[in-house]
Length: 331
Image (cartoon, rainbow, N blue to C red):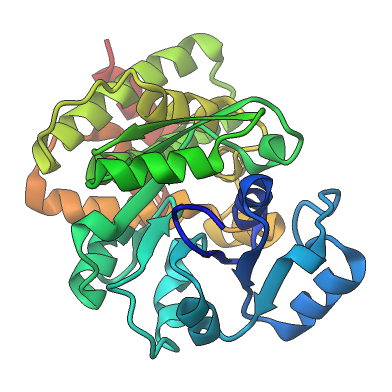
């Protein structure tokens, strides 16, 4: 038990698994919602998530599993949502319990499709969760390194500074260092955009562009991100902080980045569908690209990298042609 009350993870993928590992460092018990009963039974039998990060062992006697989202919501105070953004609405459709009195933490690095809302805005507008009860977990962080106890820095964003600090304390450990921020919206949009830019980095790698150009791409990407964040949510922030620039760098350069891998396949000539099938994992940036393009039709920020990725993924423009045009816009 912590000052955040009883804590539960909602989601069954690799990042949900890593967050569960983090939470069990400082919590005697956690709840864990997974939609499939067969996956839960296999988890209990094997002592690890059968689908993701299978080398990571858990003391399952300390985990209250359930495939009933209402049971998890009713019996826990802090809910950490880690479901892929395209599936968030379908999970929440089963919900009958109230969320407004819970502390809602989103570790989802994506936008809710159709609504074109970042997750905190979605919980606020659709479920009436007050802003002071909404928090976000920002990187840079790959689940694969977290479960190996490799040193990782997380930023916890919340409008309520006391709650942000409570969450930060709850997640801190020998291998997790935490800090707080009140820039919830900025952190969420940055986490969406860095996935888009990682796809761009992967495309360029697949097209055999080298490290020299990749450095120019990323330096232009952080400028593009800053232009958008300043327009959509003006606030005191330094985009060189790890939660913005650091997350962009690790997602664009790391072989653990599924968005970079997805982009690399596109650059090598895969179709979007064939790349998705072969990866067998969701690249959030694919959905984030369309959502950000729709949002930017309202904000009119100069975002040539976003436009290039959108044209390649959704307009089926040749990556070779589109990236060559993009290179002409860089200095």
